[in-house]
Structure formats: structure tokens, C-alpha cells
Image (cartoon, rainbow over all chains, first blue to last red):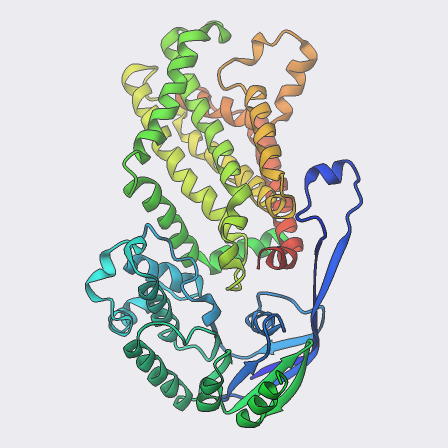
Length: 238
Length: 263
């Protein structure tokens, strides 16, 4: 379903910040700084599997999700994904503060590749799930941070993706909303959807994931039973 | 090839395109009390100022027709300048989106060209109506106006793709584009007519600028009532095709680098 084979990714940027046309015209030499984020990562996720990815800040978890989502290209190695991907890292992608909640739902969904018609059928469910009700006609700038995230989340989980990429978004909203999210995830798991979760919440990994992978120094340090991987990961801090 | 790929991408992502244009229009016109006023007020003001000071820059035209010629010319110019100024920042302005979702980047600068086109259409409609009522009337050559608009749309889209890429790769691209845009304004016959240019060499160089033909062509179609010259139309269209192709190649080549830079 998802195959990441020996993927390497190095980010290069200029030591002195962004390049200017002035530098180019003056033929000024620029020093490039490289930072290798992934160094030969291999990860296969089967259809219907839920895999948690853990690791310290900056270990390349989000980069890995971006590679799977097709946003970045690997320097070496290959990434292949079957089916429709909904990146939950794209929570509320393209939301505009001057548009109403409803307008933002259609904008966000169209960016993720869904038509207005397809969304209209799901609209009532989205509103109910987000729990925003009468505020759907209010511009987003008057929403609380929690309401905005809830709306983005509600759209993403109603797109019926084959592959869901989740980047630390489960810890949003009040406890009522969190319960709805967890139920929704359970249902998606039962429906056989593939889920990849990046998180720092170890209880989430233990509870939801069928498998966990620990990324360290750009490589997969451990891959297997969630309890096992989490224990080894936490032990690395001691 | 890149140009065809870009066109295919735009067609496939038309729903996103439509929503981005709708967003721009809603935010600019519907939710902003000065939106429409600015859209039409600025060209009217510019026209008033030029008409007050420079009507002699178009010998043989009375003040009234000078005003309509300037208004039409300014709208055509403004479509180019405004689109480019927005496009140079459009990718950076959507960095959040580019880092989160995989989509063809051309959608963003193209959506700018479409939403600003609406702005131009409103202005030109006003210009045509004004000219019909108080100017030279409705001309038989009006059919050529959409043709010129199509050519300009192609030119503006290609240029927008190019500056959008430059805007990401070079931090100071926006300043450079602003300066070049200002120079191009004076080199385009918006408020003067080419026959007043004293140096013959300069007079011969000016038509190299494709916008020169677009401005004169739109005026001929709307105000002067002259049919378009095939050579001028073809020259500007060729520029449009080349710019669109070049912009598509640039976007395609730089797409991964842009995603890394902004993600």
C-alpha cells in the first residue's frame, strides 16, 4: 500500500539566508549548508494497517509524511502509494480568515481534490462532526483556535481517503471532540483504511497503532510491536 | 511539453482554481467596502490626472477621446502590472499550503491572472459603456477586443508563472519586478501616442514590447473603430505563447525546489 524504499533526503539552504538576484548579478559565491534528514529509510505499510511513527524533534517524521504525501521528492530511494491520500498534516489547508466556515469547507476540500458536489453530500456530517452548527456562516476570523482545527479535522476525516496521514493533530479540541475523533479513527480502521500517525503521545501509539516505527538519526531504529518500540524509544532518553 | 502539462494540470484542478478565484473576489470585493471603489476609482483618477495634464501627448485627439484612450490603455496596462505584482508573492504567500498538500503550483499564479481578469472585465465594460454614451459610440471593430484580451491573458499568465518562480528563488525579486514594471509603463503607449517619440530609433524599438500592440489594439477595437492588424496580433500572440511555455518550463523545473524552500 505504502512502500518507502531506502529513502534519503537532504535539505540544502544558503548559509546567509535566501538568495538574492543581487548575489546572482555580482556572481557572489554562496555557501550552501546541507542537513541530512533521512538516510536510507525503508518502511512498508500494508492496506488497513495503522502505523505510528515516533522519534525526537527534528528526526524526520514530518519529512517522511511529506514524502509519502508527494509534497517532496526523495534524493535517493523510492516512495509509492496506492489509493487516495488525505494528508491530515494539511489540516485546514488554504483556510482564509475572511471566508465563512462553509466557504472554507469547499475551498479546503477542493485543494485536496474534491468537488463541491461531492462535498455537498457530506456537508451536514461535517458540520455535525465539527460541532460548529450555527457558526458555519460566520467568517473564520471570529472562530476560536479550537473551532478552526475542529472544522479542518472534520473535513479531512469525511473525505473517505484510502490513506490518512496524521501529524500530531489528535490532541486538539475539548474532550467531547477528542472522543468523536477516536471513534472516527476506530471506524476508519474497521473500514480497512491505512493510517500513518506521527505523534509524541505514546499512549496514543500503544492504544491505536498496530505497529510502530522509531526514527532516529535519519534511519528506522526499530519497527514492530508498538509496546516494544515505545519502550525502546523511551529507554533511549535515559 | 511543459506547457501542455500545465494546461492539463489546470484543467484537472479546475475546482481548486475556481475556489481560489472565488476566494480572491469575495475577499477583495464583497467583504471589503472599498473594493469596487478602488477597482474603478483608481483608473478613473489616473485618467483624470493624465487628461488634465497631458492631452497634447496624443496629437490630433480631442480631450474627450484622449480620456477614453487613456482609460482603456490604463486598464490594459493595469491588468498586466497588477497580476505580476501579486504573482511574484503568490507562492510565498501560500507557503503553508505548498508544504502540506501536493498540487500543481501553476494553479496559484494562474488563479491570480483569472481573478484580476475579472477586475479588468469590469473596468473595460465601464470603458466601453462610457465610450458608447459620451465618446465615439459603439464600434463595429469591438469584436476584436476579446481577441486582444485573450492574447493579453496568455502574456500575463506566462509572465506570472515566471515571476512566481523568481519570487521564491530570489528574496529581492519583488523589488526588481516593481522597478521593471514601472519602466515598462513608460515604454507602453498608455498616455502618449507613438508618433510623438522624437528619436526614430526609439520609435522602431517600441513595438518590440508586446504590450504596445495590446494597448493600441484594444484602443483601435473599442475607441477608434479600426480592425486589428494581423501582424500585430500575431506578434503579441507569439510572445504570449513563448512566455507561457517558458513560464511552464520554469515552474515544472523548479517545483521540487520550491516545495523544499517553502515547506
